[in-house]
Length: 268
Picture 1 (cartoon, rainbow, N blue to C red):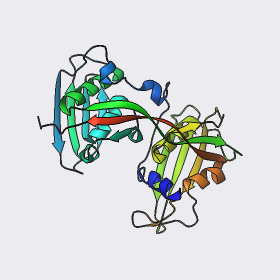
Picture 2 (picture 1 turned 90 degrees about the horizontal axis):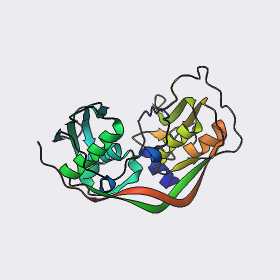
Picture 3 (picture 1 turned 180 degrees about the horizontal axis):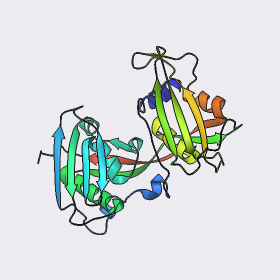
Picture 4 (picture 1 turned 60 degrees about the horizontal axis):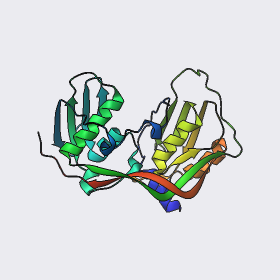
């Protein structure tokens, strides 16, 4: 079990997550698959170009009349088009998560983000011959609970943006990480943990406020050329010892997007 957790945690290494809570959850904001769209929606002009691996920054932007993606994989483009997380995209050939592309697409008029996501779905179906299917599978799910909460402090500036940052520490020759939570509700922490563990995390803490707190954790074994800090616990232990939260694992239904077909596009 520890090996599985460790592998899941590594998918989030070195990333700083700065996430703001919206008015709806991830599931509620997902666009429907192209097959359920009542009428075709497409960009006026679109360019898709393959790029060498690791060249240049990775970025994407939904602008009022344009979508721009730099160095994104098809897997990442699917995440943006359907408003889902990386763990929810499964299947497909290896290149889907390895080859990178620059995408520039413009609309004939200004459109909102939700409509542009539908346009991006249509673009992926056209240029990548992408076919995806939503399926419910059985897998590991986690529940975040509050057993004996402590050291959760109300933010000094409650009107500031909710933020959860992941910071790497290796200055002492060992590797560890810490989450800095600023003005963060438990729903946001659960969302970030879900990305790290690559499994759904449901908030059942019944804590409705926003808080400032820090969680320090390390891996079970060496990673990236560094031994884990022996004085820092794993994320599962750290949550309970640092702030009194606990992750409980179980088997349950998981909604996934299965890649049924994908082909590499020609440069244009």
